[in-house]
Length: 251
Image (cartoon, rainbow, N blue to C red; front, side, top):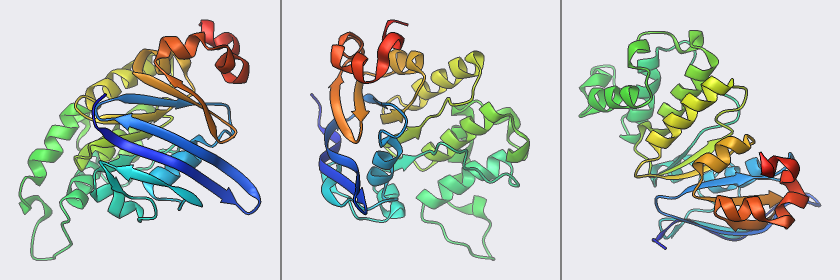
């Protein structure tokens, strides 16, 4: 197994007396596509929020490339090489597609506003922005306002913003939710492309996407990981079928 991109040890999160994450241990090697599945309320988004710094653990640690990041603010974790998307599309609707991607590029380059300097004058910004637009298949929509894009295009744009900063570890939270089958197939193709040479963690309810995309799968139930393994092992697990997959495991 290659070196760990993410290492989660004894991670817990409580809100008052309610323990949502109950001692999660997980190692995600560099370059792996890792899916986290589980029923509604299992704690999947809370786990992502802990990894990305939106929440502070009650106890336990999260390490990124061997350095502990638990307790750091999201922007600091981002600058150490981790970026994420959200369940609800998170873009700038009144800015163009190009400007949205450029924001992600500028943030990663630590560029600050200066009225005497055009943002495209920063080294490599335009080139990097153009490259990301091509990677997500939105180069021909570069001048469109983000708010008029189709839902699937907006999700692709959000993924573009997520990778614009050059993060090595990408977290995608339900990236195909609400899509048609055709849109889902295109989104999966995009996710395959952008996760080349990157580490991917994905929360997803579409079992076709999960079993077709992931190298390994972790099953989270009531804040605990009950199984982790390759898709075939998870599909065959009686414990997983009983806890979550049921008949979907045979789909």
